[in-house]
Image 1 (spheres, rainbow, N blue to C red):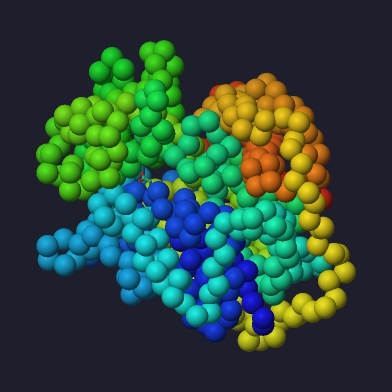
Image 2 (image 1 turned 120 degrees about the horizontal axis):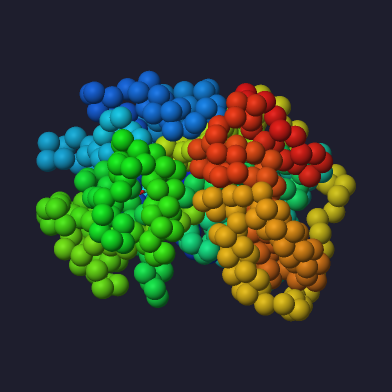
Length: 527
Ligand code: SIN
């Protein structure tokens, strides 16, 4: 095998690249900004693994399945929870320094819907940053990994199987990167929404690439909203980790009243879809765009040592913790849907793999259990590497050669579109927030779909004349938005993160994964 192309440099991309290289394969790792720019970098809470003596893979699985509201793929849950501890050990061996108690044991915290304290963390509340630091260091020094920063994947090249990708470098030059196997590790789609905890780079690139290549996507209606992002005029949306509530912080509405017990007996630690909708209801009732998160009763030592980065961010924006209450509101956070794969990361296109937030294995069902995503990235990233290396050693991957019959698209000049890309992106985000957000109604969904379709035609046409990155990111956002909206229209029930007040109950006739591909739109049965 000549080489593997890995697109994305979050935990999934870095871990897959290292696992491939350690198995003797050559890797081209492309990332559209710098190596450490990814969604992983912003992960606060941690990585959920059954490591304590009172915990087990079975208990972790039970919590995952309960949160998933009937739609979890049970085999995927078993793989995650059983293989998780070994991947945590492997991350530690790779140099990730997780927080420890005085006696040297891993420190574990609690997050919503976990029956045990099992969330391992680093740097207090900057787990993702520490993971990126350690793995970026390893990847940078690996002789088999070639890193291409500021390199944006425009399109996959598919000729019966995936042959690599057309990429755009930092100088705006397009070229073809050939690969015997290609891994989509390009993260999620949070930027499709006006309020999100995701960085600017989370533009649905994996969805756009896979869709245009003809791959199947699944579970696109399931966007998870985080209940507590800092919400204050002039301050960027910033995640306030669920671990803050895990350590005892309490929610109060704008009038200062406790409200969670009216919605769920688990109160602040109810599953995050429940907490998000409760907060939205209180905000609507009070006509405010926030509720308060109150940490005043917690010890300042605990708050400062467990959440140093949250404390620093809040201080920089005028809130002193724990004395001041923090104004918070829900924001788009984690994309459950994505490129449909099996448990080895194989997509519907030979030679194309996906893992992490880019992939949909069915693991999370209709609602992801907190802190399962970093674990998913490690477990399934390593599985993808094994699948690719295994296919190589058994010779089951035909080696692509001279005979690419569909010629990669010819680079075209950059001509300016007739509209403002930034303004259209903002309009799309506002539309998605309004009609395809926490609460979805048929009329609003149809309205959004009509608008998105019109914008899509405009942007698709402009992409024929320009390969500017911001324009192609908008193209990916629009593809993601359209697929999310269509899937949300199809799912005429409320389940997990997908809430339809016009269909408020769970309906067992909808106990299916919705699979979308350019060739067909098929609701498929639960695997
Ligand atoms: C958080 O720290 O609240 C986020 C954890 C997660 O999304 O899994």
